[in-house]
View 1 (cartoon, rainbow, N blue to C red):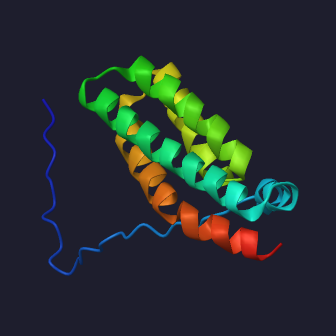
View 2: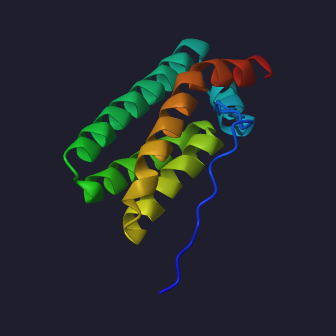
Length: 136
């Protein structure tokens, strides 16, 4: 029987804290089109309603994750992807698509980090959308 010797961990190693560094990309075309075709108050209400819907969808996905209802996560992520696409939140749409694919592949380990990214993107969405709207 062969034995292996494990070398001790060098004392010179440093622990590095990884901080999420997200870039928030959006497609300004849908939001610009919205503000060009609707009166400003209606367009603002529509965008606020969409952001609220996305926040409620995130809550439902978190509940589904807590209850291990992975199929429900995919259903809610599909809803979120459609709303995100409609208002130009392309990164949020991409993360929602990744959630759907993770559920389909049975990769439950990736769900929590993806949900965290979805939440971060959603937190930045209002600012990103108003910035895009201001570029009209």
